[in-house]
Image 1 (cartoon, rainbow, N blue to C red):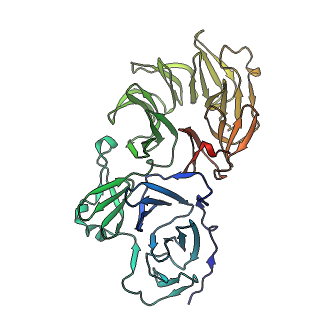
Image 2: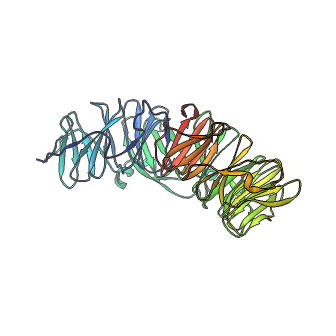
Image 3: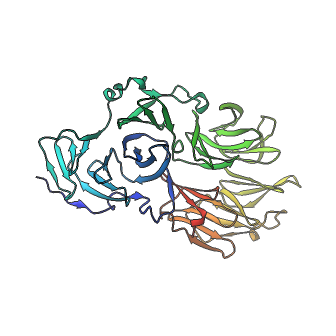
Amino acid sequence: MINLLLCCSIFSVNIVPQNVFWDHYTIIPPLGQIKSLATSPFHVYAINDNYLLFLNKQTLNLEKTFYFDQEIDLVGYDGWYNDLWISQVDNMIRFTIASYSTREYAIPDKVNRFGIDQDYVYLASSKNYSLNKRTGEVKITNSFPENIKWYKKISGADIRNYAFLTPYYYYDEPSESQAPFYQFPITALYDDGMDLYVGTDGYGILKYNKVSWQKQRVTYGPLDSRIKRIRKFDNKIYFVSPSGISYYIATTGNWKYQRFTHRVVDLLPLKNHFIISFENRVSRIDGGIAFTLSNFPTDILSLGQDEECVYVGTRSGLFKIIKGTDVPIPFGPDRYSVHAVYPTVDAIFVGDDFAVYKYNRKENRWSKVLNYGVKDIVELKDELYLLGVNNQLIKYHTLQGDVSSADTNWILLPYFNIYDIDTDGEVLYCASYAGIYYYEPDTELYKVIYNLPRVKYDYIFVIDENIVTVSNKVIYRLPIEYRD
């Protein structure tokens, strides 16, 4: 007999949100690998990378997402207690659906599969075990009872049992990818009698009705979690990541995407199509096809535009492309990496590794206004807020007119280790090493947003009345109304 102590509650493995009933933020999962599937009468449960997804069984709409900071493998539904059982390398997690609380049970070995009956969870590994649901006691067992539901990793033989799934992988539509023949394999199956649920690696979840053969597919998030830009055009919200561009319609939440074979940096709207930057070139996207406009000697870091030109910041200076042409023209700062381009009515502000420059449109000349390297520029209440390459925030007072004395027009704000900034027109949001803060220009005070986890954030975006933040592998979304 092996007596193993029950691990109390949620502290060995961290799960977010920790309190669904009080936490106002939600998590946006990436389109990852589906490792395991299970169903209840009302929901489909999926392990997507290290995320646990709750989807409506009828519509396949995503309802809830939980992120685990440790690897999780299999999920099974316990119909006797309305619980989920989730396997890890050395733990079984009991997830209570009614309260969204968890308990951990230490197990002696990684399980290959597990089965659930009324009183026990049976674990198959190098040895066979039974886990008592009431006491948490784990024992070696010589045999398993018959007629219990097993949850396991699928094999090629399991997939081939369903001939209608031939050729046992999926392709993107030509309008969805520059590599339309890339194969997305089947990674999970669950047959609940009436419907077959199919999980994939990067293609989402599919549902097949076994009577009518009708198929539904759900893409429940962006291509990956490494979000670098978020922009909104024509009621669509676009997420830019190295894998491509993901977007959803704000009123429906249905995700679509376009994959690219090269790393995507940024995108801008231009009439009825997009300008997009890949590594060291700028392309026009029209009907899902990329047409190269211009090539540059080094990688592109930033894009900006006004009515006349598109501005391209690269690792070797700034260029402009006059709209209607495809010829890049060196423009202003050169030699160093240009991280930020911010055009205004009277000027163009540019931040590189070592300074901030201003182009006066009336006088047609450049001037250096700040001897600090800057990687982001945001306008708020007729002032500019500059994020230094040293992660310090700078307030710059003058937007109009030329600068006679640069030393009198800026101040360092008293906060360090800020990694990204954005604004909703009222306050300045700051992604920091210890949570999300916002700066109030009227009071000149920082305030922390307690309704988001106090962790290090890399990016922050304010879009469509929501604060969207990126921390490590997790994307959080918080309505602005819950800021305080």
